[in-house]
Structure formats: C-alpha cells, structure tokens
Length: 345
Image (cartoon, rainbow, N blue to C red):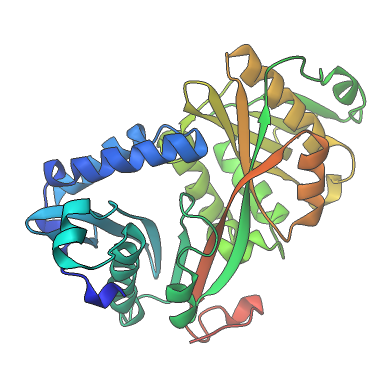
C-alpha cells in the first residue's frame, strides 16, 4: 500500500526546476512510447512555473531524490489536476526495503494528499481531472473513494500513410449558404459562442465546465491556440464552416502537432442546427489531408466513450482505439444545481 512507502510528500513550491527535471524526462519518454506525443514542450512550460514557485502541488522525495510530482491549477472556484507522475521504484531500493513500491503507489499517495487539500478548501466547489497518460482505471479507487464521478475516454489514432480521401465531394455538397475556410485569429471570440451552443446538454460539458459558457469556451480556445499543453497549434490545418458572407461559425476543427510525425485534433464541433449535413466528416477529411501534406504520418483525437455517434463517425474515418483513460469530476453539493446534474459530496 502507498502508506507503507518510505517517501516523504512535500510542497511542490519548495522545489526548483532542476530537481524535477529527471522525473519530467522519464515522463516524456512514456508519453512518446505510449501516445507518440512529444511532452517536452509541456515540460518546459511546467519547469518555468516551477521556477516561479507558484504552482500548487506536491512532490514525493525518497532519500533526497524527487521521485514523483502532482500539480493543479485554480480557475475561480474550480481546481484542475494537471498531471501526476512517479518514477518506477529503483531495484536497489526494493531489495533493501523488501517493499514492492511501484510508481502507481507513489502516484496514488500524491493524489490522496492533493485531494485531501482540495476537498477541504472552502473556495473550491469543483475539481476536474483528465490524466491522459494513465490507462483507464489506473487511479479509479482513489477518485471514487473521494466521491468523484468517472467517465471513460478513448484515445483514437489513424494512419496518414498511403492515399487519403480527398474532401472535394463533401465540400461540393455544402449548402450554398455555407463556406469552408481556414482558421483566423479573429475567430476566437465568435467560436466561443459556437462551442457553448454545441456542447449544451452534451456529456463533455459534465467533464469540462468551460464548455458551458461563452467565456469559458473562449478561455479553453485561448489555451489551445496560445499554449503547448495540447501540442503546437497548426492554423493551416484548423478550419471553420461559416455562414456565407458572414463571420458566424457553425462548425469548427482545431489541430495541433504533438510530435514530429503525429497530429492531434484538439477540438471538433458542429452547431446543433447544422448537424447531419456531413460537416464533421468534411472537417475530419480536410484535417487529415492537411496534416499529411505537412509530413504527418499519424493523426489522433480523444472522445468520450458514451458519445456513440462521434465514436461511430471516427471509426468510419479509419480511427482505431489505441488507449483509454478516465476523466474524473467532483462537485460540491448545490454548486451545479442550475445544470440539473447529479451531485455528490
């Protein structure tokens, strides 16, 4: 059990970036092997925050060596668990102690400490977590004991080698009052309204409450476009479908580069009034073609398992399951009453 481990759990803000660098380098190798994802850009950003000593979280220390970390960020009354990772135990330490300490045990110890802090913080009414790197179920016992709801999410991938379906037919079938065009920075505000409308009563709005409001969606988009947390934004891949002669968007796809040869779709949505017109399929095919032209050989995306219509579309377009992970959400009683969701303490 985690309680039997010899490590100490200490405040992350007491540790400078160099002390966590070996852990982040080891984590980057796992991201690369498991998801074909270059985590170094995110790690560099994280190291900058560490040097500022302003990032809430904890580290695990064993014999003066940092062996794991966890951090969160605050957004008003919400806390988002950004990441948790621990090194596998050293063979010499296991032999000396007789304990079968694993990286997962250290991670769960870190999770328990952070959740204890957040659950007892009166200013925190909501906690969200999407630990993409960790397989579904890896830390479910910790989250469930703390009263979280979990949602299984799928990480899908398709090959971009060989011939890609040209989206000419789908584009020609667009309604005469719609047009497809590349993303523009000026779309940022207008697209926020599209996302809020597209995710109304959608399962993903339970997972990420930024989808529920225009302001939240704009903040979400700003993070995707400006920061490398979901890869490096690629504007030439990203497209919107707009009403002809107007700037009002009715469908959107954003794409990022997550490694030298892998692209990732960070957002795709269609306004409810324009669904079942082939817009999502069109955007997916345009993105695949553009990523291939940029030299990408793989394209990935994530989807909530219960979103059956989207899962079926992605399967039709050649996406296959390569990994699954959990989203976890805790909401303080009455904090989300207006949304009609089942709330737990």
